[in-house]
Amino acid sequence: MLKHVSFLTRDLGAVLAFYSRLGGVVEKDLTTAEGFRRGVVRLGQAQEAGGRLQFFEVPGEAPAPHPHWAEHIALHVPDLRALLPDLRAAGVPVTRDLQPSPGGRDMAFVLDPDGRQVELLAEG
Image 1 (tube, rainbow, N blue to C red):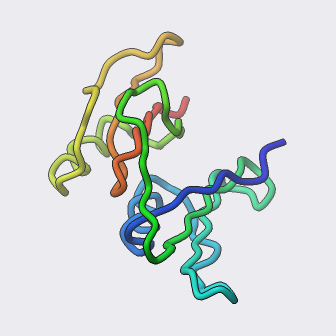
Image 2 (cartoon, helix red, strand yellow):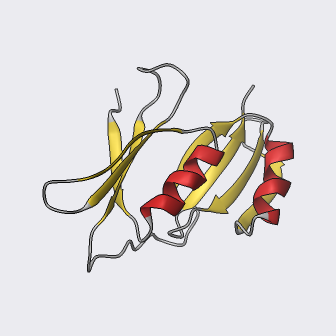
Image 3 (cartoon, rainbow, N blue to C red):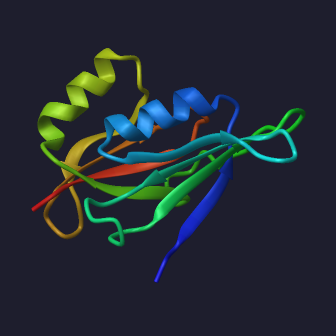
């Protein structure tokens, strides 16, 4: 069972706001003993459901996500057809527009604030 996946971020506030907009719940936004900013976003509704994304803002370090869609985070989101135009209007880059996934659900890809590919799948 997945506990969490950790990533570097340039801007913890921006990345936490982005994943919150997609339905994640910010569980932590703090400064570690080493002086790094750390945030944790819970995925899924129940406390134990899903996993977590953990982000560290470390001075002098920068994320380097791969631009290809094959390296991505995939999330189920409610009402993707309504969410995607809102994300686009907010300036979120859409890298693969709304289309059917291999399983037949609506799917799209966007970039998070650090340039990570995020696959959005309609719940259902």
